[in-house]
Amino acid sequence: MSMDSVVLLLSRLFVGAGATFFAILLWSKTRDTGWILVGLGVIAGYAEILYTTLKSFGVIPSSLLMVKNVSLLDVLLVNLPYLLIMIGFIVTVTRRSPR
Image 1: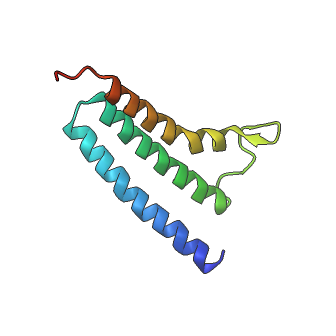
Image 2: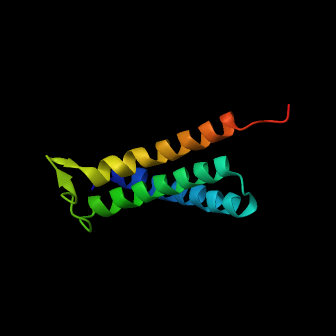
Image 3: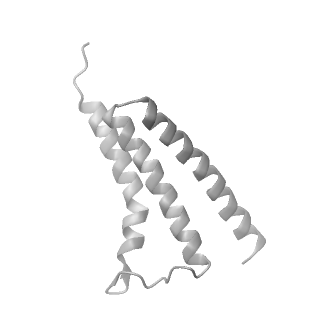
């Protein structure tokens, strides 16, 4: 593994860990559905970072849950954070405000 790959991987791990920590902290402070979904999206994004890291080191086989040469786990983990954040935004936008 080259040095630039290591730096990129470590930076994603540290920044993702910080974002996940604050998402969990926000989750404990608020009971707002929209923010909880955004926090879950951040946590799912960190899960994707961890999965990619473990896969690059060979801890997890890259052929896990393959269907027609497409890894379903890769597709799910890449898209789940954005899906959860999108749903959180939709919940927040469609909420009736007292204005």
